[in-house]
Length: 326
Ligand SMILES: Cc1cc2nc3c(=O)[nH]c(=O)nc-3n(C[C@H](O)[C@H](O)[C@H](O)COP(=O)(O)OP(=O)(O)OC[C@H]3O[C@@H](n4cnc5c(N)ncnc54)[C@H](O)[C@@H]3O)c2cc1C
Image (cartoon, rainbow, N blue to C red):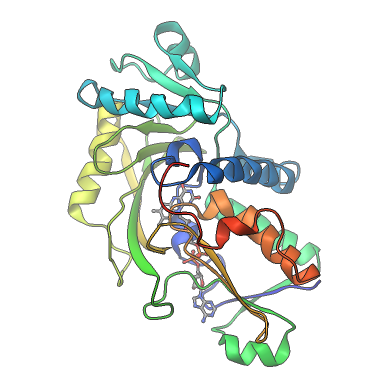
């Protein structure tokens, strides 16, 4: 099956996917993801490992993630830990020597943390380049052009619409602004993403090559319009999170600040909508889980196009799960 990807911007585009944190962290998202998606997320991580593992090893980091909290937010860590036994046995409380062994640079007094080895993270820009390379090797192409699905329908067997958030494209879809900051701090190192429990949104600090850290990400509701600029309040919160992790961030350089709109349905869960007669499929609403769930979503679509049938994971994208743990 030959695939042509139409992208209206130069490649790699500047969009929600390219600025994302790239966390493949299903456990971390249990506040917003029903439990079935945690299993799906783990399956997706395996699919990324298969796709990107050998040829594109540096895209993917498999070191798990570490959760910590300032003393005043410690109850959030405790609360989060109460959900974990329902999901997996593969997690541990870490403190003292064990914490220092995992992350020697974390010297501030955080008490204990939670280590979840099964989580992973992906470097978004590298992954997009790697996927485009793979697509070409498999006979596909990326075409820089603003496409109209109706026009494409004349030319192609199926049209798969993955345009993300566009105002008024889908009345059920809303935009959620996400902001992220890139800092460079040669006096600090991390082996894995660190999540800092925070009352307003999940804050993470993700190590990238050359002592660069992606610090994200804000979650701002009903943001239909975005000019890519970061709000002062968000910048202050993200930067103080980094500074509170280690004072050496006071001397860090700010390399970049970006913002984009995440597409989300009312339950924050993604959908595959199919119009079989028109041979049109819309994949949207990936909210905070574009990297976490796209391998499994892509697999569902490929299976449907090849066989005309829904595979076992397809119901995840049907809209029948509400936004609760279960
Ligand atoms: C700050 C931030 C942090 C995030 N962190 C994570 C994370 O840690 N883990 C995770 O799994 N997810 C994360 N995400 C979320 C995830 O990346 C999004 O759900 C996902 O990027 C949405 O992807 P998309 O492909 O649907 O949309 P987009 O990334 O917006 O891509 C849509 C593309 O379609 C193109 N387009 C639009 N119209 C046309 C047209 N007519 N013709 C051709 N091209 C068109 C646009 O130019 C754009 O490039 C994050 C997002 C943000 C903003």
